[in-house]
Image 1 (cartoon, rainbow, N blue to C red):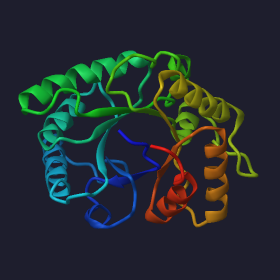
Image 2 (cartoon, rainbow, N blue to C red; image 1 turned 30 degrees about the vertical axis):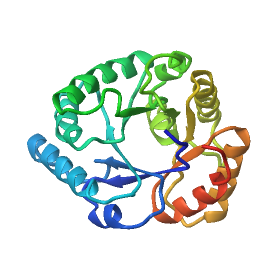
Image 3 (cartoon, one colour; image 1 turned 180 degrees about the vertical axis):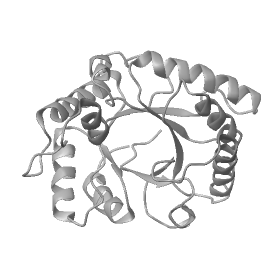
Image 4 (cartoon, rainbow, N blue to C red; image 1 turned 90 degrees about the vertical axis):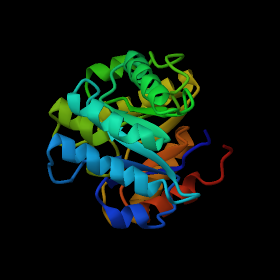
Length: 244
C-alpha cells in the first residue's frame, strides 16, 4: 500500500464530507461527534455508508475506526462493513502488537466468510491512547503483514494522563506527548511501516499547521491525520513530494 499523506477523519453520517472531493488519500469513518444510536442501527448505518462510498470509483481509501476491540459493538461494526471490503481498520486503543494479531485473525475469518482475498484489509493502530501503550511501541515489528503504519493521538493520550493540555502555549507538544510522538516514529520505523502524525486542532491557524507538518516530515513522519478539507490541502502540500 502506498504512503498516505493525509488521512481525513469524518463522521460516518456526514454525507457531504463523504461525497465531497477533499483530496485526502484516505477517509477514516468514525462515530466521534455523532449522535448515539442503538447498536443495531449504528451498524446498519455504517454498512450503508460503506456501500455508498464503494460506488465511487477512484476515490480515497476507506478506513473505519474501531474504538474498542473487546466490545461487542466492535464485532457488530466489523461484520457490517467487511462485506464492502474496506481498505483498512484504524484500531483505536491498541496496546501492543498482540492487539493487531487479534484483529487480524478476526478479519481473516470475515474475509473468508465474505469471499474476499485473505489479508486484503489493512490495520493502522492508534497506538498511544494510554500510558501503558507507550511501553508497547516496540512490539509491532513483525506482528502482522496487515500492519501498514503506526499513528498516535495527542488529545487521547493527554486525556488518559489527566493532563490539562497536550500542547504548550507556544504551540509545541508537552513533554509526555512529545515522548509519545518520538516513540511512535521509532516504533513505526522499527516495524518497517508508515509513521503517521497526530491530528491538528480544527482551527483556522494554517501557518501553525504548516509548521507542525514541516516538523513532522523533517523528523521522519510521512503522513498526518486531518480534521477538515482545508487541513488536507496543507498536509498534502508538505508531505507530497515523497516516494510511495
